[in-house]
Length: 271
Ligand SMILES: O=C[C@H](O)COP(=O)(O)O
Image 1: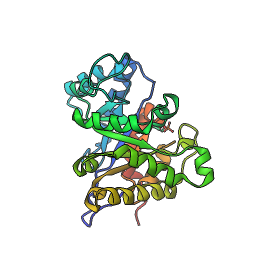
Image 2: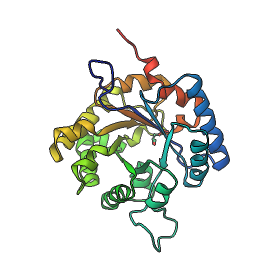
Image 3: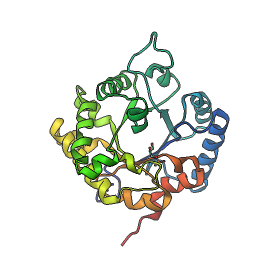
Image 4: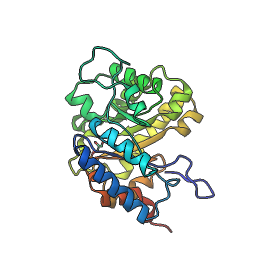
C-alpha cells in the first residue's frame, strides 16, 4: 500500500471477504447486516478502503436486496463464472446473470477452482474475458502450492499463471483487473506468508504487468494478498508498498474480525 504525499492511497485499498461454500442465504444476510452495522459504528470511511464480499451464488439475490434497500456501500461479486455467455452448460453461471444481480466483481481461478475443479489457464483466461464482456471486474487468483514454494520456483510459477490469465487483454482491462496472490500452502492452514513474501510476489507481478503492458497500467492494477489473513496480521501485510488489498477466507465469516481487517489503518504503527 503506497500513499502519496497528501496521505491518500495511490491505489484504493480493496478488502474482500470470500465466504467460499459457507453461509446459506439466510445466514448470509445476517452476516452482511452485522458487518455493515459494525463498520457503520466504527465510522468506516469507504473511500479509504473498498469492502467487497463474495457470497455463494444462492445468496446473491438476498445480498443485492439488502445492499440496495439499506444503501450499503459494500460491494459484492460471484466466486466464479462460466467462460460462456449462455446455453447448455448445466450447473454453470453466466457473467450476465451476475451482472444483472448487481455484482461488481467476480473471482477467477481461485486455487480451489484450479485444484478441485482442474480449471486450466486457458479456461481461466476465457473466464477473465467473459467477466469483462459482462461489465464485471475479474479478481484473477494466482499462487503456488507447497512443493513449488519448497523448490524455490514460486515466482516463475505464479508469473506463468498471470501471463496466461491476462493473455489478449487490452491495457485498459489490465489496469482495471485485480490480481490476488494466494500461496496455496497458506490458505486455511494458519500458515501466513510473511509480509515480505507478499511484497516479493506483488512486486514481481507488478513488474511483469509493466513488461506485458506498460508502467502506467502496472501502476493502476490492484494486487491483493490472500492466505490466513486475520486482524492481527492485516496491517503489517498492507504496509507493504505493492500490496493493495486482502482476499480473506475464514476470517471473513466473523463480522467483528473482518471489520477489524477492513479497518487495518487503525492498527498501522505510525512513527
Ligand atoms: O479466498 C480466500 C483465500 O483462499 C484465503 O482463505 P483463508 O483466509 O481462509 O486462508
